[in-house]
Image 1: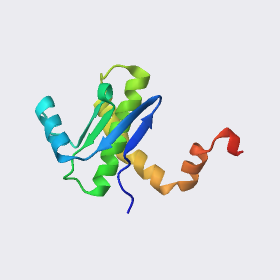
Image 2: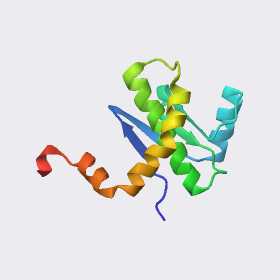
Image 3: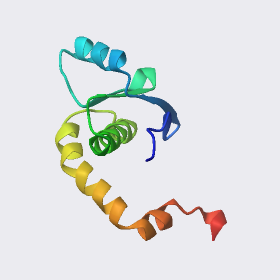
Image 4: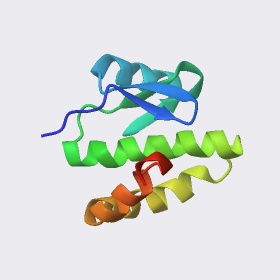
Length: 112
């Protein structure tokens, strides 16, 4: 089984990734909202609810990464939740079912 990555690079920003129970509980207190995950752009932190299955954590982590991408590209959070929620699970499924596509997308110019 693959473990949770300790950090994720989104554009020029590096985010620590954690499923620490205390960090999750603190996020619930700060936001007054219990969610599967949250991204703290200003702190460089992605926090996942530790009570999820590993399969659900993968979807949640991709969801939070997509929020990070949205933030870098748009800088507004208007309508981002609906768009990201709609695309996250199907995108993860496409990536899983198409390893040749993933390899192609991740190839660098130097590798050709």
